Image 1: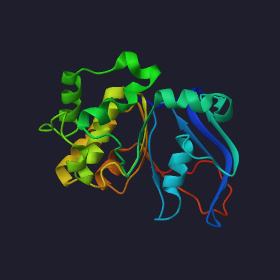
Image 2 (image 1 turned 180 degrees about the vertical axis):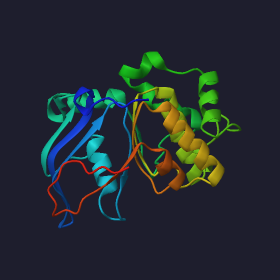
Image 3 (image 1 turned 180 degrees about the horizontal axis):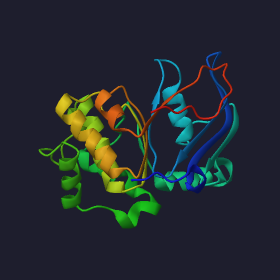
Length: 227
């Protein structure tokens, strides 16, 4: 596929001159970043550099100390965040399941009024579980019986059911064995129209369009991108 000139591409998420400090340590100083529609990008930096912090800010879950965030040109503070949530699949590294059963975990997002008309059937849920690498799971199985890797695959199945175009995910293959990690990477690349990921998975990094190395906090910069 021939890439569109940047001027013709549609910005989805824009971080404009954001600054972030955590526990007295500055992580970002006037940092700017744009995620365009159709991008498949990976954030790279040493451990503790702020990759997850930035992901959570771009996903609208946390706020920077200063700067502005936009979704499709609309400020997060003026409705952009709410619009983002309608398009976003967020897959964290640490999965907390409040529901007692797999069925409950899969249906949780569909209890929201905006999603109720898309509530999946049992057959659709089982198909999503199979695609995510949980083919032998029963919908009434207790979530407490799941391993860390199975919990990650369950959140992947839930994301498949939501059918949203934008995926932001933090170490999606970290708790998976090699076979399941390869399958997960394939699903992410196939299902996400736009993907922003933090991963140390060499295979997934190799399939991503661009790897972005985060700058040192004393560097004021626009997007740093490298092949």
